[in-house]
Length: 518
Image (cartoon, rainbow, N blue to C red; front, side):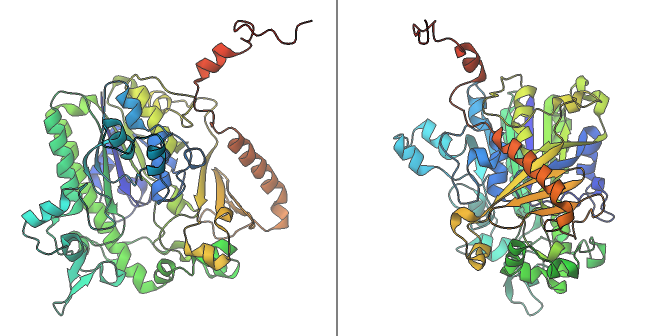
């Protein structure tokens, strides 16, 4: 079996045709869902790129793997999917974004800061990089995209800033896509030379090079993440009237939770509180998604024509969503389905999955489930003393879910790096929040701040926060206990396997230790 693990960056769950968007055209992703299973209740374990991705790559929650923000390195002691595959003679190839930051202090402590194969693997989070491209800044030596752009005739010291994320206004002036007022303009790069096209080309070339050899590829697109500059014709594919209506009420501002009130003072949120920002950005965002779908169509066509589709597990998801003005917010991070809920489609081509093909399933699925699903698909052992997710194969191969399947999804936030912390006058150790999302409730426990609670049956869009309502004290106590129980079960004993513990249980006499005898 091959594995193709596709991730889009900042893609909302409700921005696909198969999810019910009335205008957005995503025929290739929709067809992918028809060939496999679409999980309608899939959630990330953090609404932030870095920690979310580290959960996807380790099978562990942020509170366990420790990389709680984009700038926090993943500990050298954490084991990623790439390392797990390496032990079986396979490798995990990367085309695109990871947000992995090397634990340089840990590597130096182990005297692995040199250029050894192991050091390089650990610095890259277990990935063998075809082309790493994070898409938030001009690409460096880790990516060939800048050289590719220059070879196509895009001049300048920084072709990414000057062409990929810039446009030309009616007066002939170059305008940057960092200013969202400009994202109605077409990018100054041909569609075929865009970030999405380039990374799809990298993936196709890798598959062609691998030939009949089995492979595992993480294809990680930087779009539709900001800067929201789309190349022609995708920049003008949708009008503001063809976008979903913004979800927000004035009541949310009148009764705002202190942390949300502080967030809403940040620049990106103030920008998205402007109607003109929403009307400008949302059409471009949708255009980027349709462009992504087009290139996924190229990829899926190659899989079919080459015969690889019958032997390839495909996972398609996102690292989080995007507020785009909902709840008077921009960016992501906070605990609304707009951000925490993501597309999640899995296609297992084997006959065992025929029983569920084309289904939409409602079980709660999380980012941490990717690693165990890949390992079980490949017939590799699951390090259960580390993994906190569950393989999805039981949901792919059987109509009935296991009776002990999870009844909620978990997510967390570390906002210590954010301006909101300064506005609230908090220490860096005070900025944590932990959330459970069940079928009925969205519950958030904030350090040193009031709880949040939303009744999803009565208020599915989460406009009315019941976290400070005395009538919900009993519900909050129950959910608080459920959260405590969940956190107490995290797997921090990672240096010995469960089998080793079982073998060593009550074994002191076998080791020649006879304490306690009369």
